[in-house]
Image (cartoon, rainbow, N blue to C red):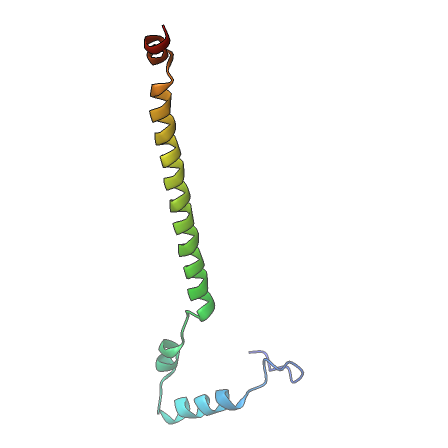
Length: 90
């Protein structure tokens, strides 16, 4: 295994890491318990999910408006069709 670089702050052991290593070595906690306790979802993931939901809701609203416009176009197309206009003005 490569030795830790003394100039790299990420590879230097910090107080929390040393304390957790001591707890694992003494048997107070296991490495598995520490791995389970890590949260994979952060507030940014929740924000991203909320943004996705908002975007989907906006897309649904947009599609509903498009459907409404198509229904109106269909209804008005029937009224101004030459067949109907011929009855009134013919």
